[in-house]
Length: 348
Ligand SMILES: NC(=O)c1ccc[n+]([C@@H]2O[C@H](COP(=O)([O-])OP(=O)(O)OC[C@H]3O[C@@H](n4cnc5c(N)ncnc54)[C@H](O)[C@@H]3O)[C@@H](O)[C@H]2O)c1
Image (cartoon, rainbow, N blue to C red; front, side, top):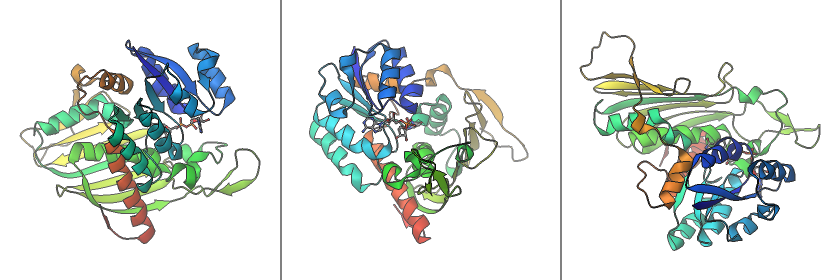
């Protein structure tokens, strides 16, 4: 049984990590940590965790002998330090995305992993979407030929959420970037997972909602992170990539779309219909308009948290994202910010 401790029991821990860990027959949540006492009490009571394993200081959770593996689910600026401390204590680590707030900041963690060789995973959650894994399989088996272009969109309307205040996501020091690191990092992972590494990017970012009320007063303060980002990229393969990432797309609660256009066919995915892929494979009919829909075979269904536990148990987990993927993605985020700031192409 893998004994798991969770640092940060906010939104993602409650919506993904905890429910998925509860489904793992070979894992149990033995400890939690949060600086917010209400969160600690609520989640501790829900999970029936003994008071002595509810920590306010993450270092106490890491030191806890009842914890073999640590999930880092805190705001972005805390990931590297917490994960590196856990790794140095010999614990397996599963780290939320984006890995950090800058590429330079990731070194402490990569050094800690190099020194300890602990099992590590990054929560690039969309790699665990069955349709995405099926798309990868289609490409690996060369069923659609060479990729010409890839279009990816992540659309939400959450910038306009009534009463949304200046939480950590809108503060550069805590988040690094806005919608780019929050949502865009998933798209970049998707695109590079399917089509290989990016070679260069040309980007623009915008802050649409420019100020919000502070968390603890009625006073307004400036939003420091982007809520719109679009960029074009060239992949190392020569394929072209187009990305749009926005929290300002009214009519979209959480829409992810990607289309891969290749020399022998097309693949199309929409998160609003996640268990099917739109495809045109095989003999290409240039007069055809619209794609066939195929159900994703059951063998492509896996869960993020079970994968982390399987890695700890020494099982082979194809396509599992690791911290080294998070580092690479952080490099792309940095390049996109540089491109937007300097209004020029940036090589990776
Ligand atoms: N993989 C995904 O699809 C996905 C989705 C949402 C969020 N995330 C990532 O998960 C992380 C958390 O996001 P969230 O939406 O859950 O945020 P959140 O604000 O809802 O939760 C963060 C929690 O961390 C706690 N915290 C803050 N500082 C702490 C500290 N020093 N020690 C212990 N706890 C501390 C907060 O009190 C809060 O309960 C972010 O990095 C975010 O990018 C990933």
